[in-house]
Image 1 (cartoon, rainbow, N blue to C red):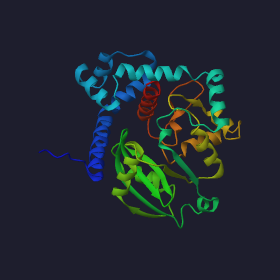
Image 2: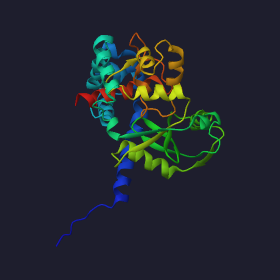
Image 3: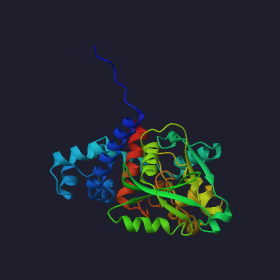
Image 4: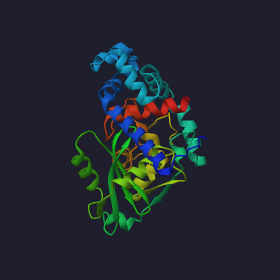
Length: 295
């Protein structure tokens, strides 16, 4: 008699972590290709052109890219083009304004995470983290190696490393230099699984910034996945329609990449510019979101 075997939660989490690690490695293999596509997506490059640009055969390029993205390179580029075509200020502005006014997050796979926002007090911001205990660690993500920073109340930071881990950590540490930092890779892996492998319940995030920065970050959450908005639109939603420079600074200061979607903010021209963690990653995230929104 054969008995059924049920995987324990530990085993299931281990398998999910392995899958995340595989996607993380594939992303780094495809980073050069994604950077190339970020500059040329509007030309609808062929599979052969993209493969040649990264020194792979079309067969191997298609196989690795599809394993990471879940779709072919052609479908991925088409998704970016379709998303950018929908950025019309009249049509897109009306839809996004309605979503913002209603307090909706849109039909986004990202927002299915049920992010719970909790801003720290202005005093905690002024003290630059003094009195706060932060745990930090590394874990895989679909967009490369992730640096996770966890406060008592939730996720306070998510950054990426493209090979220089020390620089990535220093960049995050300078945001909260007076906090008590403790390394905890297991907590980082648990947070990564919650964020990217369908964790149950809300994923709380803690917004550590000035009041206006927090306003801008909350405004970014209103841009549905698969769509983009201009910096001017974000400034309007944050209550300061003429504060373009301050809005750009707040977007650039966002410590929680991906989950606070600063990658969805673009220039008026529609070009993929101004992302702290690189244009290749911005193209990758926007393409993936566009693919999922269309599915």
